[in-house]
Length: 553
Picture 1 (cartoon, rainbow, N blue to C red):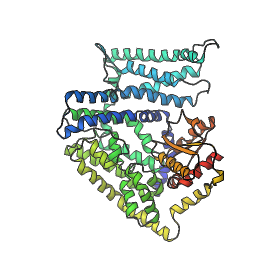
Picture 2: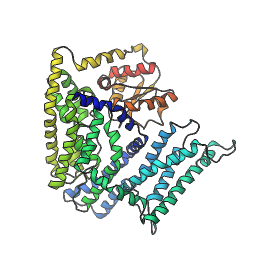
Picture 3: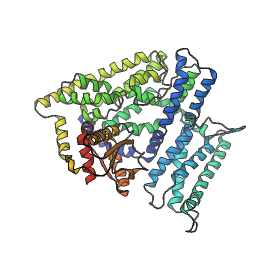
Picture 4: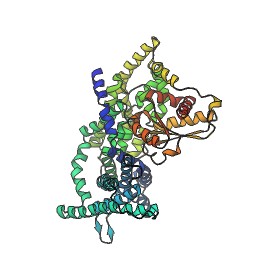
């Protein structure tokens, strides 16, 4: 086992390099920007469709109005994501560009939308078809969003532009500066779209869906599901946020599958597409990556070790809402050889059982998207449209997860009890240096001016725990310090609004980039170890001292 753990750990630099890939990050950031739209549209579909489960149908006019809200939000997702992905990629490219020669991200967003329309949207009598503006257009959107910023980069980096006299105002000069890359990008996609359709007889958007259909099918099989959810857990086991690496690669499948499921169920069919966002949220990662809900409950209520009992009770509420970093770093699970097998295998078993229920027992797969922080059993029931078998599956998954973790939990609990008897605990070993590293700030040393702290993580959930702790500490000691949390990538345009930016430990591979961005704008930055981070979230005064000490340097 130790050899296996060491082998996995030696691969961490490669995993970090993958997590830093600007194209995967662009997909992730683009999707995060569109989550409010997806949730908004899903709300209308829930209102429109759930009553039918209980034999009530809305009048046709009301139903049409509800579906209209869905069609013009989720139905335009391809258009929205090509713009947001292109902007994120442009921001990444700009970090390597001269400060006085930056790519215009607004122009890139506009041109990306135009190019997607040229590539994937067919003209029809009286207008255009909207079929590939939504989820069916996501693969085409990725192609466009990856190439248009690079076309701009080619011209901007070489200063190939229309140059106007110095007397011309900058905003007018910028319009002409964008004209050459804009024209080249549009011309490329216009010509390519025409030639491709003449050669193949179909639009590129339809063709690329056909090409990737075998991948969609394979990803939905038992082996594909095991690879996807096993990889998420494997990345997390070495301390890297697994979903932020894996999910961008399957986002198009996620969204296309749930859209297909909704259409199938609406037509009275049986929805069988397994790989969706809700499957990840409410089945595979029940209680967070590694399906840690039942492990956390065992720590909280039956552990004999003081360390596990304290960590479990402090973590049970956030883990219930799928924020499981406190238990991952607090137990710890990261690089813990005793917990390797249940952490990696439990999510796989969960999704396999779900697939069996769908394929063999006739249960519908997920048709609705809910916020990922919805407690998993509730999300499973609502997301499958109150399927009767969901009421059986939800408790079954909890029992299975408990059975998977229990023997490993008992071994680890016993190990810690022995260490505690000897007067040495993992917690004491980890917390001692943290206590020394955070000097207490006296009342007379508190800042006289307002200070703002931003905490970043992959989705804004883990970071909110530290942000709230800093805010509580400031309120308790009447310090003029405010703190908020965001997902990594959302901070790019507002770095100078803060005095300090702290990066959560699971995103540590991004720290070099964050540090470079912050130093360029005169803003302090920091990251922490996993155990230290968890300790700070539990102690508001200590969290405030941590932030103040960093800002004082």
